[in-house]
Image 1 (cartoon, rainbow, N blue to C red):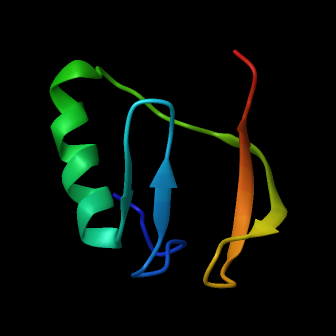
Image 2: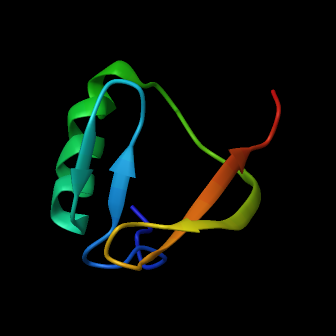
Length: 66
């Protein structure tokens, strides 16, 4: 698992779940593994977005179209 691009205090949110921290990101990814077979993600773009309430820079990530 390549997670060196993520800060230890990273924040993740989607329509179903949100959490903060690299350890929680790793844990949630491991929970998904049984549901994914040979899954991969290739980024199309990683663009700056607004800042959160603590002033941290947020990023907008868009996957490559399938």
